Image 1 (cartoon, helix red, strand yellow):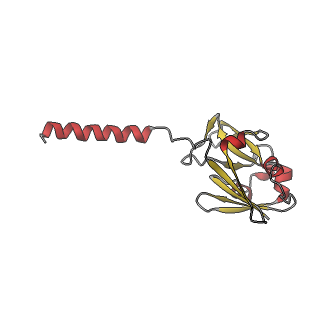
Image 2 (cartoon, helix red, strand yellow):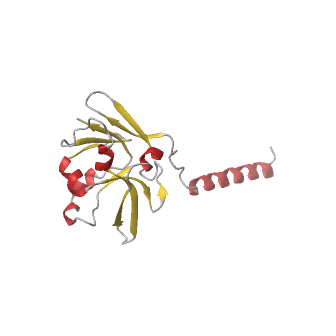
Image 3 (spheres, one colour):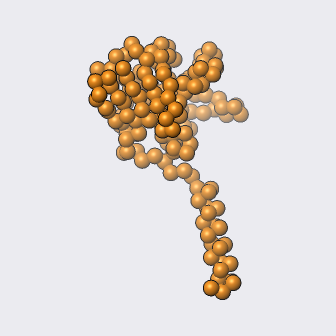
Length: 165
């Protein structure tokens, strides 16, 4: 290969790398299962983003660290649990993320604060790279008592599983 041709091949590959680095992350497929709900009896239900969109919708408005308003849209957790047959709604639930991080969500949180299983942030579906496709978010701006590390830890990104006892 001539030096000039070699130069153009390298330049082209560098351009491709740059374009892919600046590209938007691919959204999670709407029809692919995004959330698995495991019941104590061994039954497993799965929900795609399309199915979650068919459930009652909720939203949460939050200010980020720079003071910009964020608009989260999804299914209130208590509404999802109402769709699960045989779920004991008085017990805590165990949530797990794609990276295997897990946290227990007390029943009192679900009733009082109504956290949201968000599938959109600022009008866009979230990619895995952007902490999606699902993010369990609390309404931090509505309840000052939520601004504690314990509640930040319960606000789980890349939510993939819920275990109901």
